[in-house]
Length: 123
Image 1 (cartoon, rainbow, N blue to C red):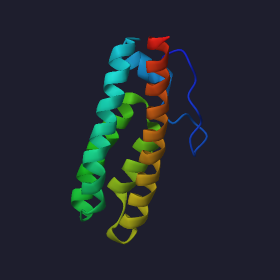
Image 2: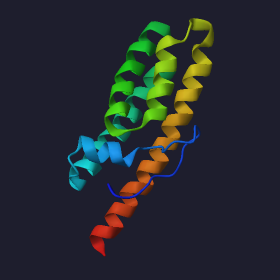
Image 3: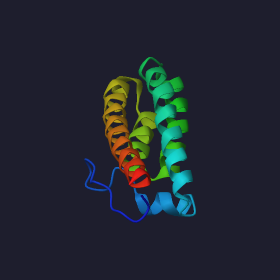
């Protein structure tokens, strides 16, 4: 995983910055896979809560997600989470929708990365 490039995301950068991920995990591929799986699980838990929360609670939950996204190199998710943190109540729904789209894109890319990683292990 650590040596390949990731697909570009909506903003033109990688959905998951694999160079950053490798640096954060000291190049340990099994740790890369583990933190990617943990990130996906965290999004599964946090996104429904963010979607149903009032502005202050959504901001707190988005801050948690932003930290995790920064840790794995999912910078588009981190930017979108920051948008939720900063959104006024009137703009919260739009900010949450932007975050949901970024999270969906990151989940799809992570699934692809994990699948490719598993295929290399089996081969």
